[in-house]
Length: 551
Image (cartoon, rainbow, N blue to C red; front, side, top):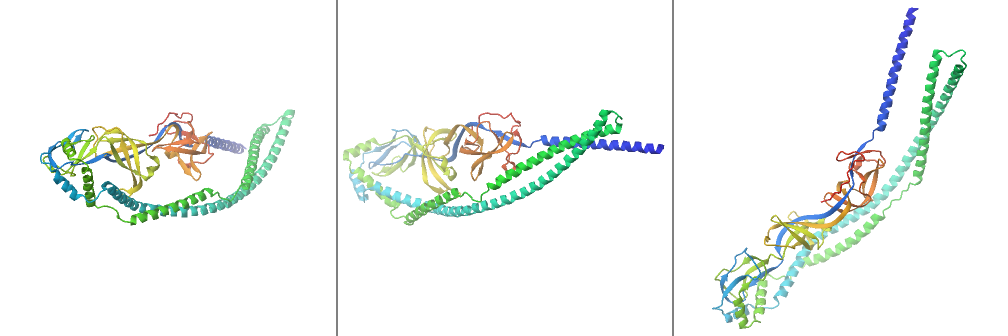
């Protein structure tokens, strides 16, 4: 008898231990589920700011004079005073050369110049010769570039044609795939709805049985005859707990049933809106434009080939130019009287403008003849920098834009005055455009022939909405980025404008204070609830709104 009692006590202890373990496990599962439900994925964000953004083009080049004059001797005489050396800076009006006119041989001068004269129209002939040479050189430079453009445009037309076919095929494939996916999901939902309905019936039936048992025990308890035993009281409490649990499960199943019905309704609407037709109107327009541009390029190529193949016909040799130059000097001098020649010689040679002596053909005491080249003066008041510009920066520059020019550590104001229309290969073989930047405020520290750094100031947007350039994505329909909207990931279409190396102007789609996600777009899903984390470590509600100036 005692052994039986001990066995029952051991079993009761075992049951209590098992029940306690089960309760602990249930609590742990509930806590874990609650923690999972309250933890949202975190994304890095940056708050949209406003500021100024400006396009700048950095380049370099060589300082050159825009006013250069070669001085020729007006008389046959001896150089009495030579007041300069090559490289000297001279001011306008400075006396550079004095002549000794005692042995002036006027008759010999005329005889020599007359003997050299062979033809007139030196300037016109040289200009025509130079123009012909430039035209041939420009045409030769253009031929290879135009041929490459024609080849590229033909490839573009082929790519656009293939893209139109690809888009149409992809649209049809997507429609068929979506239809199959919708049908599969509909079948899954039907099966799920059937299972939920069955579970709901079972749970309702079980709840009815439990409720009936509770009613019986509660009725007996109310009557009090006989009173409920301890086991019956325990049973009543367990039945009440079971009833509450069943009610919760029935509520969950009912919600699942409503969710399934809602998703089935959405699938039905999505199926009705499917279409296999692709919009290729934009690609068709691009194709038409490309075909028109190809025709123009082919016409330009044919024209430049014709000019390039004409060779150097009409281009004067250096000796022919010198002969024409002498004849031109003779034409000018023959109009002068003897008194004028003497007066010209007495005046000597003065600097017509402030500049630098860049070349000299004479020395002090040398005998010179009328029309002989003596020296070259280059202005330091009318100077510019010859630079080159990459093809990627062509759209950022135009004549009239301001610039900053740095020469030997000193900065000057400048203006872009010329952009060549023909690209030429640089030392690496890359086509670049030549341009000239005039120095607006030159001084005595200007050196000709030295290197200069140039920054051309382009378009500017004041107090614009700014976004770091790396956060702008480009798709088939334009530019976009990802933002946090009402605590969820949302895709935002934007219109962009002026860009610097760091920032880009957003004309529409964003405003100051919007929160833009900086994480990779491949990791983002639209509609996903998230919590934000600023790059500086701030959390939601702490983003700074400071104005940023993009440089």
